[in-house]
Length: 185
Image (spheres, rainbow, N blue to C red):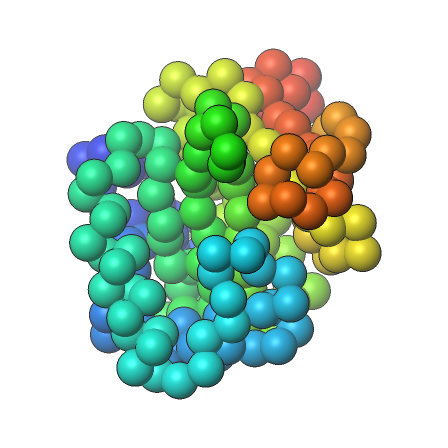
């Protein structure tokens, strides 16, 4: 797996995980503007309603990316076979104390059910652990059954519920490097 600190792309069997560009605005709008996706976004990331608003969001993400210390960042998920941008994922510090790293993912609804979130998430988890992170978390609203199922497919362990993050009741999942090592045996 390439080191993303020296290479902007991470490749899996079916996907390319790369930095966002402002040219991705139309494709990104099909993700972040979709009601089925937007209903589960964090409070600071509301549904995006038009291409120019999406371009502004992407501009902010592009500008912020070089300032993140690995493994933090935001990336686009592109399907290798056709170059179609189908999703996004990020690693970031969870509010309010910014001590726990969160993995989150969003896919365009017509890309759901193909294992793309699990494939991209697994690649980023592996890369993050190569950067020295000791654990990653995913949080999901209890009714977001797709996110909960993806966290479980990623090998993340349910550790409970909390209102600590985003002032919402959330299911919390965690994965550590030893969880991956244990599966490899």
